[in-house]
Length: 419
Image (cartoon, rainbow, N blue to C red; front, side, top):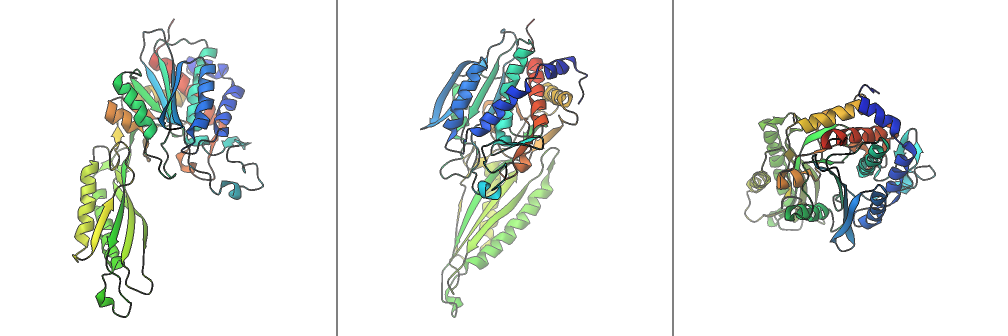
């Protein structure tokens, strides 16, 4: 670990590791599977007030499901910085059975094993939330008073998977308050999705399409009387794979790669009969600058063009609208901007080998800030997205500590220090 930067060395010396760990493990201990965000929000509200944040408020984005936000006022002469993240986690089905009889059995127990903290939400994204809040305490312990304002917002309903949830209802409610002026507009935002302390100034977009192909059933002995939906589905899949190859050849983004589509599910069949129905599901990756509407239109053209029999019908729906009715838009800001460079340097100083500038291979809620509000934002936090949503979700403790120090260093640099 390099400590050549005097501020970073000062912050490492001031870090209260026990308190920082307790904050993070307490966050994991408050189960907040999508729909139950209130359990975690109550904990955050208490901790935010204990850290001396002012105007700590909550408001329900749906009945019984609140957001929470607050701020640390500066001296009034610097920029305003927002840390934001989602409070909900994915489910824990099968976790206890997978780890039965081990220290990891309780998904909310937050055990420390081999230098890491384990549990549902450890990385996605309670390490990021806890690290951003612990940075407030660290700045106070280091005697650093900010010139600009530091704000926090933690919102629900980001994760998909629970019935009737996962449409970003929380951040929609929150950005609405910024649009009306009720909540002050930040100059820059860090969304604390896990990045291994890399900085992601660009992210993919996506949409999910569900395709229902309907033919006509007939007894197997007289197939000429039916219309085979599975056979039509085969033609549709071939057309979609060809389309995926075509869009992949169009362009390559330096941070997030190439576009493609992935067929993720197929079902259908008949009981000793010509299959009347076939359903397909796909997900389409989009690059920054690609239009969701245009991409969906291309999918529909490929699907409908693959079915030549007019008696076979097709219905296409898009069940995962986020900041767009069809899905989630891609987003990017200038990867060479001063804010990105400053955060990159802060993380590199906090932990050797970290702070690289990369692209997000996932979709999360930065587009609500970048595309809807025009607020530059990045992803950055401890944790590795590759083990999130799995039974192996964990974050290295030293990486978590480095995230706190890196965030504190960036906050001081971006908001400015009041003498």
